[in-house]
Length: 406
Image 1 (tube, rainbow, N blue to C red):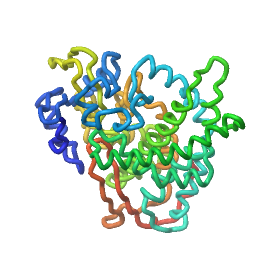
Image 2: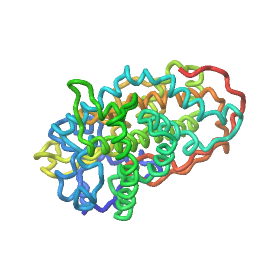
Image 3: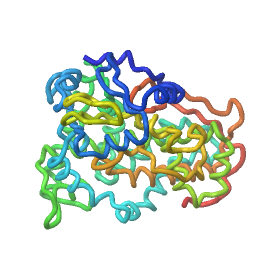
């Protein structure tokens, strides 16, 4: 069984340890974890992209045992878009791809901007803000709640349950956490089941109705698949975007020259989001399982063995990026792997980018104070997700400039 207490990288700042480990070997076996650590950009991109690597934990008896030993105990996302392989993954992906195309995302741009503006209102009024609970989590929650049209009751339920549900994205949940995750998932599913029945007979213009009633030639999902898909989109999309906003804002506060650059160049906010994703990726680790004996560089990964693709290490690989530990919002270079690569590239990446760009632009224009003592944070301990528990920011030192959102 994997010993997750042996995880070799500190949660607070893993990047120096990533560098040291990568310098030793780009791919290395960790006996206590019972897995290969993949630390270079080249090998990480290959493992994420190639079809010979599985995302389904059922292909590794040891991994499945660590998750509880069965699909029912291990979690509701097994067999979902996140944890499945072709042809199942291909079919599920086709069912949702059309909702997250660049054109589809742009159609809701104004609404996302309005949600961001509302969340940032305390700053416009000269008030301090606890960014995680008042902004980073509420913004993606409000967007996804509107997309699914779950109403106030649904939004409140999701806000209460998603912190627990987000733990299903961890690679090392304890048994107690698995039970809590199962209870939270059941609560959300019990809310969704009658909603699916209602939209089946009375469809609306929302994403849930569109999943239930695909267009001619579209993929028809079973009821359980629709509910699991909703659960995944609610949890993964919400958690990833919230931590992109939190980590990105902390990085800007720690680099006031870059925050000032963004305030001067709001039209380049899209580039800034890409660099913030590279610099401190919300998801730090992705799991893959070898379908057969596979080579990564000089290392052989045996069939059924797990490869832990360390995205945070890959995104700071000096073989790909000059001065990788430096935040440079105008950086150009190879694409980062924060949203994955290949078939499992994050389906909601475009929406997350839009929400983050609107938020960072609004915050950059708000005149946030960056002097010593004007902000503080506390990070949650997690091997998998870079997650802030809180980020307290003082009131702006000047009124907002009035520059509009991009």
